[in-house]
Image 1 (cartoon, rainbow, N blue to C red):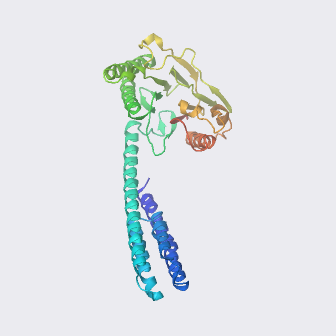
Image 2: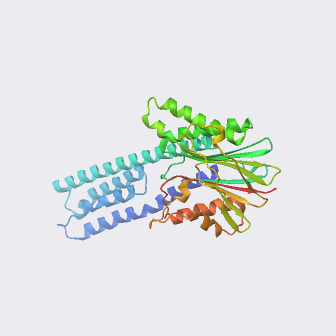
Length: 369
């Protein structure tokens, strides 16, 4: 987001709050006029508290305090205009209005402080997201790539879903995975797994050796954590590893308990199911012969959609899971990978009525040459 866009986003609410000040100001005037014109026995002054209360709903503590000051001033002037003077009852009303206005100012100040803290936390989360899950290049070798991450929790930016891509040795290596659990432990494991992936990818390890290396890294981490966390031994990660050679129209995959990718070839959609899927990382001690490589055709123009189970396990309010394969079959095919992930993103949120039960990651990959 550009600085110019941020500045305009902050100026717009300010202009709006200033325009809304007309409402509490008009209320003060109307209440005072009604108080002066009605019978002297009527006491409409206490209604002036509505003005700072309304102001606190859209403006900051300063404007709320200003409106409270105007309300107290009106409460003092009203009996003078009526000619009754400031009686003991009016003094109590003035004190009460002053106390309530001060309370509203304090509440608004606390709310503004929490909003600033939340904005700061979100900015840190966004920075951590880019460090943990680095933005992927739109072009990587012979591939065009688009990604999307949908956090289940409001205001969250990161979680246990992960993806990465590395171009090395005439091929593009891709990983997508989902760490069991949520919160900081899941983020820690995701960071460890991504570090192990980048290291093994640049060493040009074969896919089975890469899977074994990732499994060993996770097992070492969990064994070390088991000393102070009894649940560490129950962790696991589902992972899908893919290798896209630059000059050969194919893709090699290893599935470690991860949902199969969906291939869009012309107007057909098919799942690239693994013939012998391996266990998720952490379920069993890894060995090289445990992971079988599956090879599929991946021609120029084909699109491969990778996803985590947060997509397919998203339920509607009626309890039906999101039919991903059926929905992308209805995609018009234009706009490439970026249009596809945006289409799935919007359609997924519409299916869930805006609320996901789990984080969801999407990766669309198209061969362009």
